Length: 77
Length: 141
Image: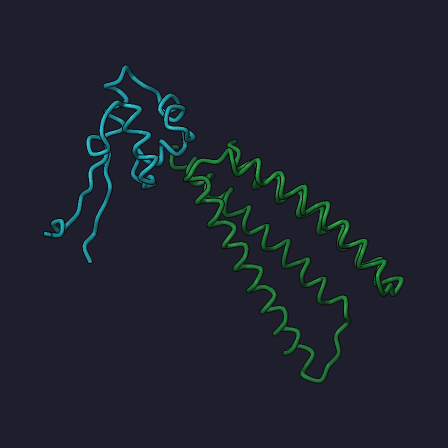
């Protein structure tokens, strides 16, 4: 079974967006600051909906914020 | 302290109080050897009031939780449910093994087992939430 992990650039994007605080991002995404901290540190994988909310808070697409790192290549159709 | 932590403390407190009051109620019923509808009705009414209040409060609290907190709360609930089932099973079999297959047991033992089970279940559920957040704070979150 291939191992996979979701990494993100939230910390960097916050600083690139006028030193946005975790609380400000949490308010925009509609979650608590603790949840943002957990996502930033990779301890919690957000739902697709929350990932969209966070990406929208930065004005970016989901793929620009979250990266899927996997050992195997995507299935060929 | 976030809303989930407050919920855990509140539920632990209210369950403790409810179990103590119910225990006293069982004690009174046992003392007077009460039977029939009166004892049953008093417990049903008290249970209905506590249950309705808890349900309304739960609905309001649940709406304020984000998806991660809901997951934590759900896992804690599952842990509490497993604990309750496990406790009741162990208590039932322990009674069988301690007293024997042809022994006798007082009828109040069953509600007492249920009350202790409810308390342990809620304790485990609340403790799981509080320990989770305490560990996160210890990790610098």
